[in-house]
Length: 184
Image (cartoon, rainbow, N blue to C red):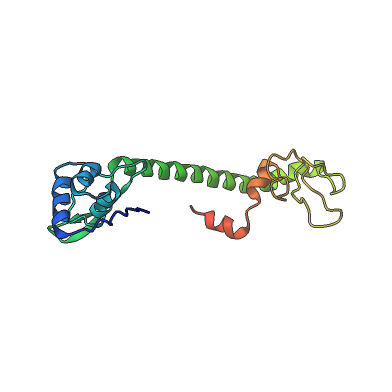
Protein backbone atom coordinates (compact mmCIF):
# COMPACT_ATOMS: atom_id res chain seq x y z
CA UNK A 1 0.00 0.00 0.00
CA UNK A 2 1.39 3.36 -1.01
CA UNK A 3 0.33 6.23 1.32
CA UNK A 4 1.83 9.65 0.90
CA UNK A 5 1.85 12.01 3.84
CA UNK A 6 2.65 15.66 3.33
CA UNK A 7 5.18 17.00 5.80
CA UNK A 8 3.87 19.89 7.93
CA UNK A 9 5.05 23.36 7.01
CA UNK A 10 7.70 24.77 9.35
CA UNK A 11 8.17 28.51 9.74
CA UNK A 12 11.80 29.61 9.48
CA UNK A 13 13.28 33.08 9.74
CA UNK A 14 13.81 33.09 5.98
CA UNK A 15 10.25 32.21 4.94
CA UNK A 16 8.81 34.45 7.73
CA UNK A 17 10.80 37.41 6.36
CA UNK A 18 9.70 36.59 2.79
CA UNK A 19 6.06 36.33 3.88
CA UNK A 20 6.27 39.63 5.79
CA UNK A 21 7.83 41.37 2.77
CA UNK A 22 5.07 40.13 0.44
CA UNK A 23 2.35 40.94 3.03
CA UNK A 24 3.63 44.50 3.45
CA UNK A 25 3.79 44.84 -0.36
CA UNK A 26 0.02 44.19 -0.48
CA UNK A 27 -0.06 40.52 -1.54
CA UNK A 28 -2.97 38.41 -0.31
CA UNK A 29 -2.62 35.51 2.10
CA UNK A 30 -3.35 33.04 -0.70
CA UNK A 31 -0.65 34.50 -2.98
CA UNK A 32 1.91 34.38 -0.20
CA UNK A 33 0.93 30.82 0.69
CA UNK A 34 1.39 29.67 -2.90
CA UNK A 35 4.80 31.33 -3.09
CA UNK A 36 6.27 29.85 0.11
CA UNK A 37 4.40 26.52 0.22
CA UNK A 38 2.23 27.15 3.28
CA UNK A 39 -1.53 27.30 3.66
CA UNK A 40 -3.41 30.58 3.46
CA UNK A 41 -4.58 30.20 7.08
CA UNK A 42 -0.99 29.62 8.23
CA UNK A 43 0.09 32.88 6.58
CA UNK A 44 -2.80 34.87 8.04
CA UNK A 45 -2.22 33.37 11.49
CA UNK A 46 1.47 34.23 11.32
CA UNK A 47 0.59 37.82 10.31
CA UNK A 48 -1.80 38.22 13.24
CA UNK A 49 0.62 36.74 15.75
CA UNK A 50 3.49 38.97 14.57
CA UNK A 51 2.11 42.49 14.12
CA UNK A 52 5.61 43.94 14.47
CA UNK A 53 6.60 42.31 11.14
CA UNK A 54 3.30 42.36 9.26
CA UNK A 55 1.57 45.71 8.69
CA UNK A 56 -2.08 46.06 9.68
CA UNK A 57 -4.32 45.95 6.61
CA UNK A 58 -7.14 47.77 8.38
CA UNK A 59 -9.13 44.73 9.46
CA UNK A 60 -11.46 42.64 7.40
CA UNK A 61 -14.59 40.64 7.89
CA UNK A 62 -18.15 41.44 8.83
CA UNK A 63 -18.47 43.17 12.17
CA UNK A 64 -14.77 43.90 12.59
CA UNK A 65 -14.41 46.67 15.14
CA UNK A 66 -10.68 46.92 15.59
CA UNK A 67 -7.87 45.25 17.34
CA UNK A 68 -4.38 45.70 18.68
CA UNK A 69 -1.82 47.34 16.46
CA UNK A 70 1.90 47.29 17.21
CA UNK A 71 3.68 50.64 17.25
CA UNK A 72 7.36 49.85 16.51
CA UNK A 73 8.57 53.32 17.56
CA UNK A 74 7.19 52.96 21.08
CA UNK A 75 7.49 49.13 21.16
CA UNK A 76 3.91 48.74 22.42
CA UNK A 77 0.46 47.72 21.27
CA UNK A 78 -2.47 50.12 21.06
CA UNK A 79 -6.13 49.30 20.61
CA UNK A 80 -7.75 50.66 17.47
CA UNK A 81 -11.45 50.97 16.74
CA UNK A 82 -12.59 51.88 13.27
CA UNK A 83 -14.44 55.22 13.14
CA UNK A 84 -17.56 53.73 11.51
CA UNK A 85 -17.84 51.06 14.21
CA UNK A 86 -17.19 53.67 16.89
CA UNK A 87 -20.05 55.81 15.51
CA UNK A 88 -22.42 52.82 15.49
CA UNK A 89 -21.52 52.03 19.09
CA UNK A 90 -22.14 55.64 20.17
CA UNK A 91 -25.49 55.73 18.32
CA UNK A 92 -26.65 52.50 19.98
CA UNK A 93 -25.60 53.76 23.42
CA UNK A 94 -27.46 57.04 22.85
CA UNK A 95 -30.60 55.19 21.72
CA UNK A 96 -30.45 52.87 24.74
CA UNK A 97 -29.97 55.82 27.10
CA UNK A 98 -32.90 57.67 25.51
CA UNK A 99 -35.14 54.60 25.92
CA UNK A 100 -34.02 54.16 29.54
CA UNK A 101 -34.71 57.84 30.29
CA UNK A 102 -38.20 57.53 28.81
CA UNK A 103 -38.86 54.42 30.94
CA UNK A 104 -37.61 56.19 34.10
CA UNK A 105 -39.86 59.17 33.35
CA UNK A 106 -42.89 56.90 32.85
CA UNK A 107 -42.17 55.16 36.17
CA UNK A 108 -41.87 58.53 37.98
CA UNK A 109 -45.19 59.71 36.48
CA UNK A 110 -46.94 56.46 37.43
CA UNK A 111 -45.65 56.70 41.01
CA UNK A 112 -46.74 60.35 41.32
CA UNK A 113 -50.21 59.65 39.92
CA UNK A 114 -50.53 56.39 41.87
CA UNK A 115 -52.64 57.56 44.83
CA UNK A 116 -55.07 59.49 42.63
CA UNK A 117 -55.35 56.53 40.26
CA UNK A 118 -55.98 54.11 43.13
CA UNK A 119 -58.68 56.40 44.58
CA UNK A 120 -60.33 56.57 41.14
CA UNK A 121 -60.24 52.76 40.73
CA UNK A 122 -61.42 51.87 44.28
CA UNK A 123 -65.18 52.02 43.47
CA UNK A 124 -64.60 49.57 40.60
CA UNK A 125 -62.40 47.19 42.61
CA UNK A 126 -63.31 43.51 42.88
CA UNK A 127 -62.54 40.66 45.26
CA UNK A 128 -60.23 37.87 44.16
CA UNK A 129 -63.13 35.53 43.38
CA UNK A 130 -64.81 38.14 41.16
CA UNK A 131 -61.59 39.03 39.32
CA UNK A 132 -61.34 37.91 35.68
CA UNK A 133 -58.26 36.61 33.85
CA UNK A 134 -57.63 39.81 31.89
CA UNK A 135 -58.16 42.21 34.81
CA UNK A 136 -55.49 43.96 36.88
CA UNK A 137 -54.43 41.99 39.97
CA UNK A 138 -53.00 44.99 41.89
CA UNK A 139 -54.15 44.97 45.56
CA UNK A 140 -56.07 48.16 46.46
CA UNK A 141 -56.35 47.81 50.26
CA UNK A 142 -54.75 46.14 53.27
CA UNK A 143 -57.64 44.24 54.76
CA UNK A 144 -61.30 43.64 55.23
CA UNK A 145 -62.30 42.05 52.02
CA UNK A 146 -59.18 42.29 49.89
CA UNK A 147 -59.93 44.30 46.74
CA UNK A 148 -58.04 44.37 43.46
CA UNK A 149 -57.89 47.07 40.74
CA UNK A 150 -59.83 45.08 38.07
CA UNK A 151 -58.92 47.52 35.28
CA UNK A 152 -58.15 46.05 31.86
CA UNK A 153 -54.79 44.28 32.12
CA UNK A 154 -52.27 45.02 29.38
CA UNK A 155 -49.08 43.60 30.93
CA UNK A 156 -48.07 40.38 32.61
CA UNK A 157 -49.21 36.79 32.16
CA UNK A 158 -45.66 35.70 31.28
CA UNK A 159 -44.18 32.82 33.25
CA UNK A 160 -46.62 33.24 36.11
CA UNK A 161 -46.45 37.04 36.34
CA UNK A 162 -49.71 38.56 37.51
CA UNK A 163 -51.69 40.74 35.11
CA UNK A 164 -51.47 44.50 35.64
CA UNK A 165 -52.86 47.63 34.03
CA UNK A 166 -50.30 50.08 32.64
CA UNK A 167 -50.14 52.25 35.78
CA UNK A 168 -49.65 49.32 38.15
CA UNK A 169 -47.23 47.60 35.78
CA UNK A 170 -44.92 50.63 36.03
CA UNK A 171 -45.37 50.81 39.81
CA UNK A 172 -44.52 47.14 40.38
CA UNK A 173 -40.78 47.71 40.84
CA UNK A 174 -39.39 46.87 44.28
CA UNK A 175 -38.49 49.82 46.51
CA UNK A 176 -34.76 49.17 46.01
CA UNK A 177 -35.05 49.48 42.23
CA UNK A 178 -37.27 52.55 42.53
CA UNK A 179 -34.80 54.29 44.86
CA UNK A 180 -32.00 53.53 42.38
CA UNK A 181 -33.98 55.40 39.74
CA UNK A 182 -34.66 58.48 41.86
CA UNK A 183 -32.55 61.44 40.78
CA UNK A 184 -31.43 59.75 37.59
